[in-house]
Image (tube, rainbow over all chains, first blue to last red; front, side):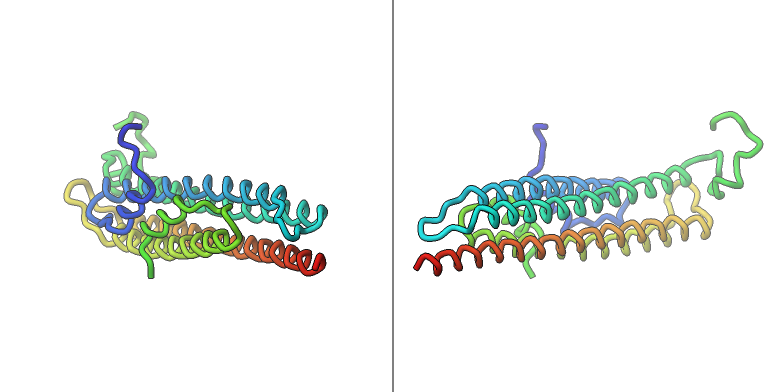
Length: 130
Length: 115
């Protein structure tokens, strides 16, 4: 945790990345995206909860909305914030799937058993791991 | 167009609950950040899928074209899906802004009612 990057650094690296230079670079790029999106989802959820509480309990000096309005609108606002956070997490999930596809690619490339052929047509008659 | 790092810094640093104007600025920034991230993820997925399809490995065997096509297509599809999810999130932020605007309107009405 000592070398934990701030989100700003992660974003700067995302913008400057040349991820088509190799497998490790591409993997790091995906990992950066995942970090940023997970952090954004957490922040959005927390901020919507804070905002909804703030708008519910706040008492402006000159005029406040009615009790029913404040409760109803604060619940709606929190709901929208949760939906946003969920959508961002969905995007993070997709980044993980991209990493899985990439891993499949590297495994196929590296494995002697499949020898670069599709996995469904190879290794059918060999039981030992190569 | 602001850079992603600046948007992220603004998003992390700004408190949303100072006052109504600050909250509106926070929502604007968050929406802009989500749109920008959606665009960048899409472009990155396109680049990655093209790279995976056309690359020639220095060591290891090059996969047959059918495999490369499959994997690059899946990469691009996941990237597009991630971009769509982020656009959905931006949509939710827009709905959030509408609810906040309703709050402001109610308070304004209460002020006017009290005189």
